Image (cartoon, rainbow, N blue to C red):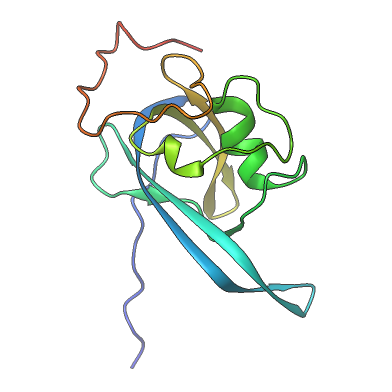
Length: 144
């Protein structure tokens, strides 16, 4: 018997999709395997709800650091935080409930996050969004 594979809801690729960061998970002892070598370290997973889509989407477990080469810095800190610099002091939870635009790219049979941008402009370090803040209308959101 073969188990049924979960079918993931496909999203549009190569265009901006509005959404909101709804959950941030941390694992301080996450096991990563890179080129056959096991490494344990802090990790983060970001979950978001995209407008007009039923299923929530998320990143995979990414190494949690703000170095200039890290995915967390390139995809979330640099594009979403005003005055972002590598290794800056910033509480990642400040991104919770932030309205964003996400672009996906097709990668074979998979769809991967290609870019993330703010819907209304970058947030200031130390400024958290209020939960359940009314979403912007299509006319109010910044078009890229």
